[in-house]
Amino acid sequence: MSDIIDFATAVAETAGEPRALLLGNGFSARHFQYATLLEASKLELGTPLRKLFSALDTVDFEKVVRALEEAIIVESAYGHDERAAELREHAQDVRTALVQAIVTTHPTRREELASQYDHCATFLHNFEAVFSLNYDLLLYLGNLERRVLPDGFGFGKKQGLLFGPFNEKAHCALYNLHGGLHLFEDQAGNMHKAVKDGRNGKSVINAVTDIINEEHSMPVCVAEGSSTQKMQKINSVAYLRYCYEKLSSNARTLFVFGHSADENDEHIYKAVFNSKISKIYFGIYRPDTETINKFTAQFAKYKALWKSPVAYYFYDSESADVWGH
Image: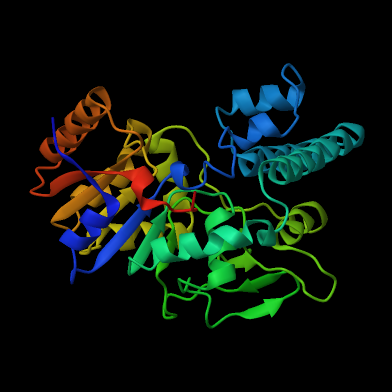
């Protein structure tokens, strides 16, 4: 069995080395119920809309809305105005359901986590760059509160409830590999982020839900199930491709927190094991012999698959105390 060290020891072992962090769902698990947003949306099983999600083999709300909007064009062209109107209502129902899911699963305001932001900021300060696989708002809200990581929007301007666009020339240390509920792409392919409106007291979550409901724009999230499907989504969005390329070219010692390394994110580990890094410190939640052996086998498989010389070590993820006790 591989030795397990605590987080402080891992940090001490890498003193003086540039470090990067890869975040999975475990980062948000204390505050965000990471069942799929579809499950939290209140769209009932057996209804046409839930059947449409199944028919498209997706949990991506944007993909379903896009399919409905394309169907509206067809129905209108064939003179089926009533059917087109019904589908238009269904598209809005999907947007409303996504809003419901966001509000249900997130703290309403980032101030609700105020007492825990210092712990999170202390954790993040150990790293020069952070790659997030989460599309929830927890990292974004925390980063807004303590401003730990520049996110590449530094040259942008506020336009209503959005700020942007993202600029590759702006300083960036936070890469949303799977998008985020706060990220919106315009028709030109530029990425913008939702921001709170201090004039009327709207929080970021209010802003996100208003953009979805009132502007009929959908956030950019990689919510698909398989690694292949996720990679197809990443390749379809310039911002996501840029973030993925940054992971692929990362040369910093990589810490992984809150992730399972399963095959449905094999595209992420392909980038990691083909990058320029020499060491990975992988966090395991409440490690026991069975779990350690499972991850040892998984990492050995990845090393062999991509003929990588990367060394890997395991640390107890609870010892990082990301959000405080």
